[in-house]
Image (cartoon, rainbow, N blue to C red; front, side, top):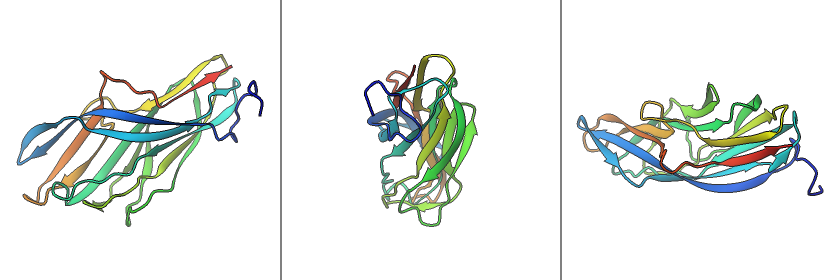
Length: 194
């Protein structure tokens, strides 16, 4: 493929590694406390350039997670949110891969321009697991511009990332809530529409 050829839906695209810093909090015995300095890694694949109205694919692959067993006996309601700029039309989406998830089944919830990968099922703490990769097929806008992707979520009640956890010491369920730090915004991918 020549340098001037637009990428298509069959193009593997360019893979980009990103680290998202989060604002996080959790609760123990009814008291909320901040969790400072928490971050997660992601690998995003998207074409650098597409033609107007062309179909293309973006994939979001989160890094494996190890929820420390001393704080997380069991996890449930795991969520990770992604956002696509609204100018692109969503054609389809699916989850692929994932490992060490036991019997947990994940699905995608659409929230406007956001996609939330989540599961109501439980996963044991203290075991590293890898969430499924989200693949989204898009159609580029009919006018020139840029299609970007980024972390979704914007508050503790609209999480970018998190889960509910059973603490081994008090046997209580409490949330682990994170949203992407607005002071350090991250763009996962940027595709020029020509």
